[in-house]
Length: 520
Ligand code: NAD
Image (cartoon, rainbow, N blue to C red; front, side, top):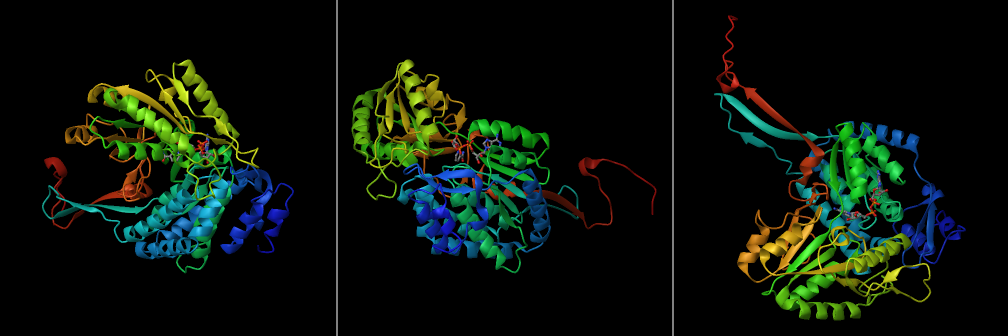
């Protein structure tokens, strides 16, 4: 433990993991001394104990931060993109060097099991590598001009400061998806992480700040972090100095933030809630479908935006499939996410547990039969919220099934033909992720076609969660329509220029318009 951070573990609110958090920051060569305060208590969902208490940024701090981001942008946009990529290459290497410490910190603060935390840190490393390659690939187009001796092109310039608001459930990866790509695109960045996971955020942001401080081309304040709650996020949404806001979280948050950004004609990328479904067809490989279903429904304790929340299983196989599913769910090891044998860690907090129990009560009142869902006592953790994942057999896609409850609840519905299955799959307000388990090529293709799933993510013989960084990630309808991570998502962070050059001696107008003037 470094000397300054001893204050963390000796603080009056510190709990069982506070010392380890301080040690992990020490191992990363980072200090939290300047971030401690009395505004925001941070807890570990593993046992509900306090990890640290941080100060929060206020409106005046945010104004200064945005001004600094504006100044940093003016310098950074002039740095050639491959040199911008070099910053991310160095950062990716640093994260790789510290993968284990970062994963452990993430698990302690967020509660996801260690293997999933390692996966999330790997996702940060992967997107860094992607962004480095991208820094040499920010290409435009040459378009055929209708006018002789004219060249029509489209190219891309840096846009401006990025404000990134993120959710608790992916406390590092979502930030890296946006920030690493935005940085190679020439933007500066401010991060407002979830108030439930600010320590992981501080570790990842400070490592990047450290790399930037040692990099000759990186201006001061290129990457900043704002610790705060919804009010702080609102300042980012409203601030005219922020060119693009990437906001990940609940639909309620997106409805507020989206309107506020639009009011000032800022650019927004909204990554909001999902209500993801799997169709299990009669031809499916049942073992594969069971494994895919269980992981997608219970991974991260049901707290992924892509968590499987609805199972739409064919009438002919429903009884047997559901029986096996319930039996398998009952064998999952629920417990400390630091224990290698654990499949399901804790919910983030009491509010999540209460929300889950309210949803199960509503499901019962709408005719559902609930299997599991009860609280599980884990020795020595009376303030933590561990649950048995719930499987709920529903008579129909009722009101509660159409809502996203951010907890491990899998509603089971059945269908008679593929049209009915697709109608059920699409019959919710959200449009993030979807999948079908089938060995019938016609069904698989139909599901991916324009008359199939209406989601942004459409999988065949894979569960709804666990996207790779190479594709564009996001969804339709109330999921917000944004796309982040790979593919051409980088275009969000740049402004498009359409340019026409006339290298002739005449001035032909487009569409054959005549405007003759007698000028030599
Ligand atoms: P949340 O909406 O409570 O908070 C998310 C972030 O938004 C936090 O940083 C919070 O401080 C901020 N915030 C909340 N209200 C705000 C407001 N009115 N103005 C400005 N900022 C505001 O979400 P959560 O509980 O942290 O995360 C769970 C939700 O996030 C789920 O709905 C999940 O599906 C969604 N999510 C979506 C994706 C995706 O890519 N589509 C990824 C992860 C999580």
